[in-house]
Amino acid sequence: MRWCRTRHRRWFAVAVVGLALVSTTVAFIFYYRLIADVGPVKAITVTLLVPVFGMLWGVIFLGEPITAGRIAGCAIILAGCSLILGLVRAPPAGRAKSISTQMNADEHR
Image 1 (tube, rainbow, N blue to C red):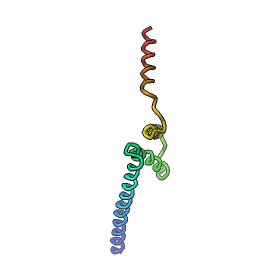
Image 2 (image 1 turned 60 degrees about the vertical axis):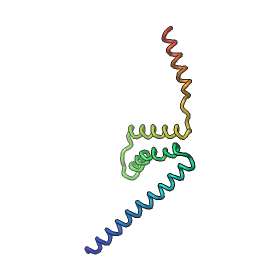
Image 3 (image 1 turned 135 degrees about the vertical axis):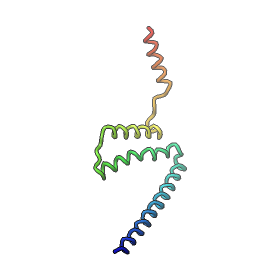
Image 4 (image 1 turned 180 degrees about the vertical axis):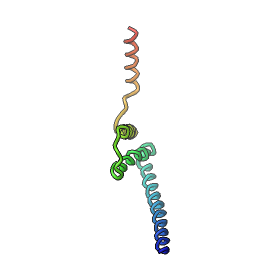
């Protein structure tokens, strides 16, 4: 019986080390390939999505509750990623200045 436990511990250790090394190596290869293809600024959005998927997996596999704070956090992260990737454009800075200048002029009348 003792031999069986030792044998399983060895296989467990080999499996954990193998999984860690293989998955980390593959992830680094994909990440550096992504940097080469789209550039470092756009590639960083991959790391920004980690909390979103962490919450998603927690809800699916662990039955964690979906709260308003989590939804708001995911929305902020996705909005930031869409701005970084250029899917959505921020309003031009000149337009914002002209509106504030116009509002100041209206206040002084």
